[in-house]
Length: 412
Image (cartoon, rainbow, N blue to C red; front, side, top):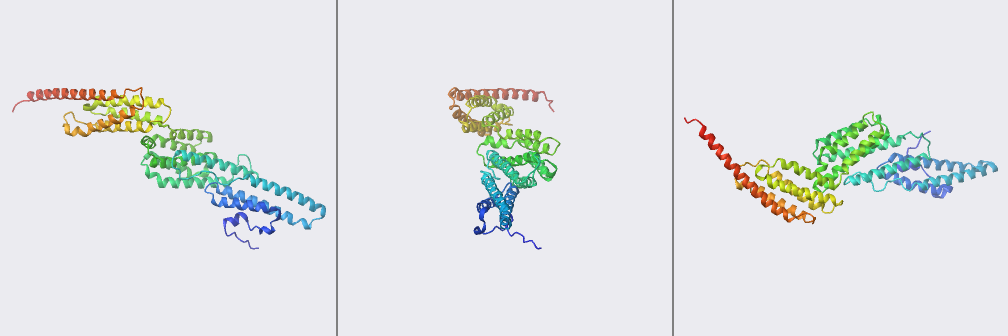
């Protein structure tokens, strides 16, 4: 006996339903199944779970039709019993299908613009997967700790899709640590059948956030956030999740490590400003002696600015603070490796960088009345005089030492 193969996914899910005029008691069921089948075909995640749910419901509807078809061949008493049971089955199946509001998650994108969108997508995906598993359990029995094969296949497909997207975008962020993290996640994907589903879930989430963070790095206009996302410790946290999945660690241990990665990505704008200030301190250590006093003034006032900004507990003034500290950082970076005997003309661009930093920092300080903003200008003038006086003194001493050395040399 030959089997007619379905010609489309719709036909595979719905079979060959009778025309509406012949559907009888299962007419509403057929209509609901058609709507769900359309969603299942459009699904980009949890696809096989959706297919199986529709197919099992359709098979239940087919069996109801078959039962109703036997009524005419039954004795009257049996016919009434079959009819009553058939009606109960129709009501029960209709209720189950009506409970399925949708097979598709809300607000889910596999191309998130930032980590916030990524977390929203993860929540939508995981919530819908749990919902579909609950519905599927009403049509087929399984052990409490059993993972349906549909879920494992769907998860592997989603993981694979996310890793492909990462591969296409990781070059946007030139970070060796990111590459190591991606390689570790790819290793999990390669050996995905070896790990329990509960651990794989965190691999998918980590990959989702990696993709989101790369996109955010490319698109963010916040220089502090962009700089932070390029740091190695962010990607080391992602790598740690993958390595723990590949180990003998439990799902709870993997979950804890995943939360550490999320915390890394969730760093606040206030913390970013403070971190940038500490980088400013580190940069000041490398400033050459001719600009040391002025550098210290910029660092001291930047510290006051960050303290006030942090005390606000809001992101108000964030852009002004970021721009001010960035200007100061550029000034300090320009003042590295300046020779003591350098020509004034060669230092003009550095002096200009310090003036720009002073202006930007002064503007930001005015946002906080408790700081003596005008005092910055006075302090910078004093520091400039100190730098020049010290430099002149050092040059004078250096010339005396040089002359003494010259006089001590033997004359040929």
